[in-house]
Length: 455
Image (cartoon, rainbow, N blue to C red; front, top):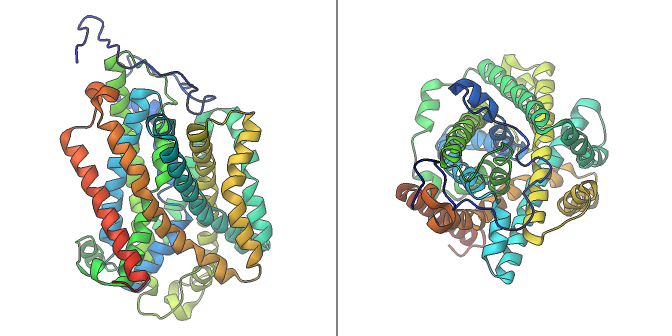
């Protein structure tokens, strides 16, 4: 591609007609032009933490802790691989948004047939619903554990978070980033403290990051492994990342400005996803060190809450304080995840069906579209919390199944030199992403065949 050496500009980065992604915050944060590395990084720090939240939402908790309780540290390798995959994919999503000025939903809608776009929209919307299952149920249960509020009431309170998001957006996007960062810090500190008390076998922990063939050959282990992948690598986060990477003002006609934005956006994303990796590892380690071999049920949040206060299960470290800290971390996780989930829902609905209406009505509609099925299930099984929580692991496996439908367009678009110019994926990135996609599809088909008894 020909570049003007004097102006360092290129005509390829011209936005197509159409609305901007999350228009009210798009390009709203100015970036210093001649600042040092750390000041510039600080300016770009923020979107990554919102992305990372999706990788440690309540859906991770059940799958990760249950994985540790059932198979000790073996599935730590899945946590590690999922995190590395997440770093690669989120860097690609941010690259797409920064370079093109479009998010993944907008480009998918523009560059696919109407029928294909509708199918992808439905799958993505179902993925948002699956995400909301974990967020809403997790937050509702946390409110029940802390304040003794009935679960249905807690779910209704959590559903109303769209109103809180409207208020936060009025305060500026940096305020949202700061609030979410605080909630993430609470989660990290709580689990660092609880894992330290559990005194895990560090040698076994390190060995857990070494891959094992039993993960594929053991049906139960594979089911949980895919649940961890689905809970860790979130489809909706790819859409979200391609959008909020555009909150920093970037001159897309200036290749130096674009390259700089990509560099610092990727650093921010990788730092925050490393934190998510630590949190997910802590969850699995906690499950293994406290519950492996105890024959105690940890398939529900209530079970985990009660177990942390029961000396017959977790020994001398049992304490009501540990249980309450767990509930506080759960609430922090649920609330931070609902903020990002609501934003992702708006991005997906705007991008695929070009929804244009007042922001309050738009967010309410996108929120209700994903929340109502969850509420319906909760009301139907009112009084049967075990049944309600049973949705969680299934929802995470569904996210793993839906993931390729987001990855495939992402890889295609970011590898397109006509669209991305010199910032298209390098060969190793493109082929690695395709290998990841193929492996996920094969594993999901294998899991489905096993589940229906055909394999």
